[in-house]
Length: 98
Length: 376
Image (tube, rainbow over all chains, first blue to last red; front, side, top):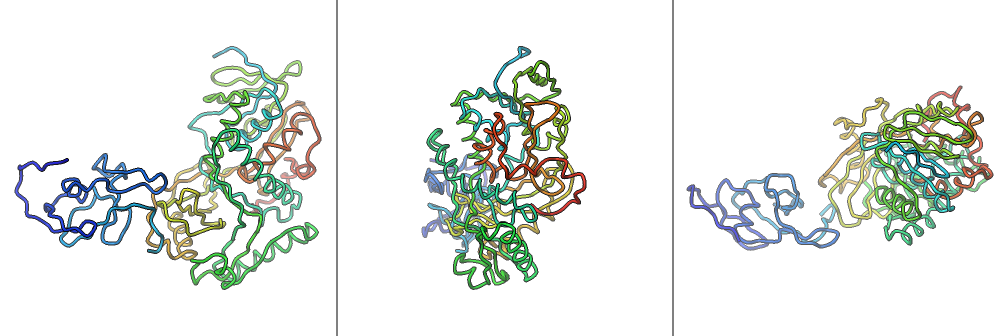
C-alpha cells in the first residue's frame, strides 16, 4: 500500500509485529513502519469491532493504537521504533490488570 | 425570530432537569417549549458522573431520602419508556452500589449516616456495612487499602449523555419544541400569561418552569421566587475502554456500559470555574488506584470539570410562586437520580395537581438560616 521514498539513508531496526520480524527504518514511527509493512488494520474497535488504521499520523486521531512492549492502546504514530520492540495489533478491549 | 410563540408550558433550561420535566409534561399531552441557553452555558447535564444513587442521601431530611428512593424505584420504567420511544438504550443498571472506604473513620461515618437514615425512615432503608473480606467477595479487584464499604442495594447508574439525548428526542417526538440559543433576559406576567423574552424571541404560556440550574439564581426573582444556588465543582477522569471488570457502580469509580472507567467525586468551592486542576485530578486518580490497583497502568483519555448546582443544605428547591401563579422553580444537583420523578410525578404538580408530600418542605425559605453543609 505504501512505498518508502529513497530520499534519505537510514540504518535498519529490527522490530516484531504479532510475532513476525520486521525491518523498520531508524527514526521512523511505529505507525510508519507498520503501514510500510502492510499491517492493516492496526486494531478493531472495542465496541463495534470496526477495523482501524492511522488517519492523522500526528497524535490526534487515536486510530493507530497498538500494544507496544506489553502496554496496550499506545499511539503508534508518536513512538519511534527501537530495536527489539514487540508490537501487537489489538482486536478487543483491553483487559485491566493484564 | 421576534414572533411570540405560545404553548401550555414554557420550561427554561434544557439540561437533564429541564428535559425530564419537559418530557413529563409532553407525555401528559401538553404543548411545551423548552428553552436552552446555548453551548456557553454551564452544563452539569454534560459533565456529571451518571449515578442513580440512594445511599446516604437525605441525612437529616428523610423526606428527601424518600423522594430519592421513589425516583430510583421509577427508573426502570423511565429507561424502558425511553428505549421504546426512541430506541436509545440509556444503559441503566441498578445492581446496588458501593461506597468504598479507605480508613476506619470513613467507614464509621458511613455507619452513622446510614443508621441515622434507617431510624428516620422507620427501618425502611436497606443497606449493608461490609468489612474488607465481605466487600471483596462482592466486588473483586479492590485494593488492600479498602477497609470496608457500605452497600446500597437500590443504587445504580446510567449513561448521562444518552439519557439527555433520549429525553430530548422523546420530547420532540411527542411534539415538544426545543428552542436552542435562547438565553432568557426577562419574564413578564400579564392577564395570566407569562411572556418570556430571550435574546432571540418571545414565548408565551400560562405556566412556567425554571429548570436552569445555576441560571435559576437570576431567573427566579423575575417571578417572585428565590433560588439561592451556588456552583460546586466536580472533576472526572475517564479511561480507555476496558473489558468489563467492575459490575457495580461505586461512589468514586464506575465502569460505563461502553467499558470506559470514570473516576470522580471532587467537591470544590471555586466559583464559576469549570476547568480542571491537575492537583485535584491527581488526588482523584490516586484514590481510585488505591480502591482498584489494577487501574494503575490504565490510560486516562479525557478529564473535565463541571459545576454542581448546590444549595446551602445540599437539597433541591421545589416551589411555586405566590405572587406569580403558574410559575415554578425546580433545582437540584441530582438531576440523574431524580429524572424518573421529574418526568412523572412532578408534572402533575406543575399542571395544578397535588404536590408530592416528599418535596413540600423543600422551599427556599428553609435556607435562610442554614449553615453550608457537605451533605449531598
